[in-house]
Amino acid sequence: MPTTYLITGAARGLGKGLVAAYLAQANNVVVAAVRNPDDENSKSLQSLPRAPTTSLVIVKIDSNSTTDAAEAVAVLETQYNITALDVVIANAAISQKFPRVENVTAVDILNHYRVNVVGVILLFQAVLPLLQRSDKIPKFIAMSSETGTIGNQEKFEIPNGVYGPTKASLNWIMKKIHLEHINIVAFPAHPG
Image (cartoon, rainbow, N blue to C red):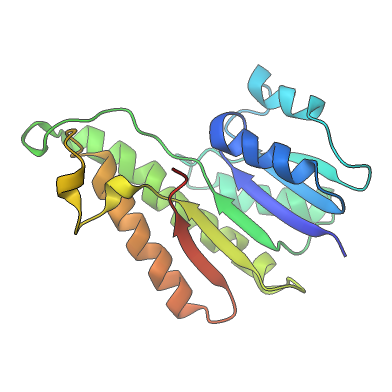
């Protein structure tokens, strides 16, 4: 059986690198979730080299949307006959501002939480039934950051009143998912 991966934020950066790495391995189905499938970065995923027994599926998941993740799962099941996922990597995130806490605006922090935390929760809720159908040990991984640390904030001298708190919250959510779902391996990963 092939291993089926779903990776959000797949059009560029780490997400695109992960898609490329899994496409290069034999016997994989790689689902690349992108904000806009018609964007040139998204279309360029089709030209990535791939092993002969590996396939690529591109779906729309904008982490700002409250419905995209569930709609993408429906598309996977109905149009592509993908009824199980083995590994989901919640890579999509935003990091747009680095203010001191005294300068954080409600709009900025809410926008970052919506994508970096709520988007991951909605993704997990949407993919949970497919992870539970995996014939392997299913994994749900979220890209975090060492800037989300609580105990070692002194190591990071840059102002980080918006992005850091969202990653700290994400780390908590990932631990809770792991504890609540004993048959799913769930953890945050710091890519650096």
